[in-house]
Length: 356
Image (tube, rainbow, N blue to C red):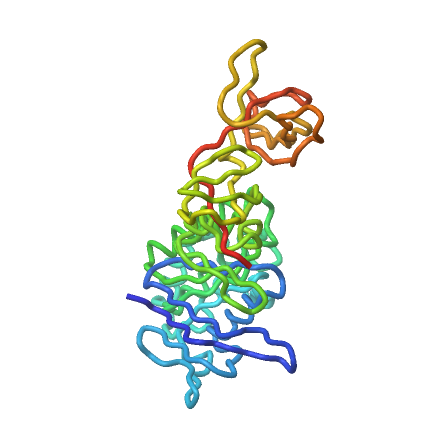
């Protein structure tokens, strides 16, 4: 069952088309991430869902209730949707407890117990209840903002780049904490971000936006392995894209003959491999040549447990110029040194990209 349904949502500001016929279904209890570059329309779409803005055309329903259509617009305060902005937006003149309890209908002891329960749910020490927002770290402020949003028992939670201002290590920890909290509470969640790794790790469903349009949506692994086009492939991570001739399930390209996930015959196309699908093997002198092609390691980007290598394919004919450069991911401990000659082979299938 889907909690949220967007049907052909469009929005323009003057001559600028911010959203162009966007349709999306968000399953109940899921975590959907809307990702895209700056100006892609993702934040505008989130504001439409929250009720801060209204579309020019289209329909939006939540748990079967129509929030927006051509004749009806439910205001934000009546939607029972939680919203956590990028900076937390805590009230600076209120304590942590007062921020979390803002809007709670309960009074007295019942109210205090509910605030304590919410603080515990977001891993905030009870002793922080009387602190002021400026006395908290960035991660603590975000947890207070999340507890305040959860206090209203929302039907849907919207997160607008809530981790972007945090340090890298804290960002990953907060992302895991929030994902676990929302899953335990059974709250359907939509996160907006421009961070690809954050999107891939947080999402049950990933929606990629570009120029106001929804380009592709689905399971994160499917979008990473089978992106619709080259631009989406490169946005979601490093990719090796090259021309090839497709014949009977095989691509004939600079890497040799490799299997593909499309069985078009005798057609030219662009194929994509992720760097981790390329495997390097050291060439032992006087050994028989293995499968794949030869390359020279020209650059190394060491990052501990992994190392990203740039390799330059070598032509079969020594009179020809060196071929294209490719990115390859290797173990950090056993990555071949710069200047070494290696054999390049592939793992799995190459993905055939759609024609532009």
